[in-house]
Image (cartoon, rainbow, N blue to C red; front, side, top):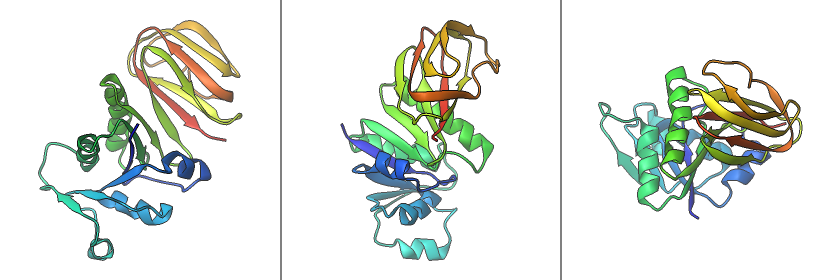
Length: 208
């Protein structure tokens, strides 16, 4: 398995858990996400974007990193272009680091993007260190979070047969209508098993 970390321009906290998750992964930065490379002490193999979010000092500081430059007027975000570059380099799994915070439309797109990637067979999750999101679709999923972590499920459509195990408030084959708050703010007792018969969404966790 070849895992790539995509450095996005959202918020990021350099927690020990995040450092462990991205250890030994290959690194691609998307535009201003390059700033996280310094925070995390990472070597970046490719820098992708139109570079409209980077000031001259940042561009000069990382002049040695190979760049894939795109026009400002394009039909994909810098993050999506970075993901495409990782896939062309053989990525079989992705960590989207810095995918929360900033513009709400970009955050929502990142959440939907990991689900879309999962549907195409590419494992991916988002982390900003203190907040994580995993794709939810039919089947069984193991979410490895520490005991005491807050955990929510956000449905993107009606969920059928949702099962939650090893949480404070478990569910067994529960149908959850789109827009319901039933699955917000649960508490993990350790690694959580999530089963779903039909539907899509994301599992959002705040590691304790």
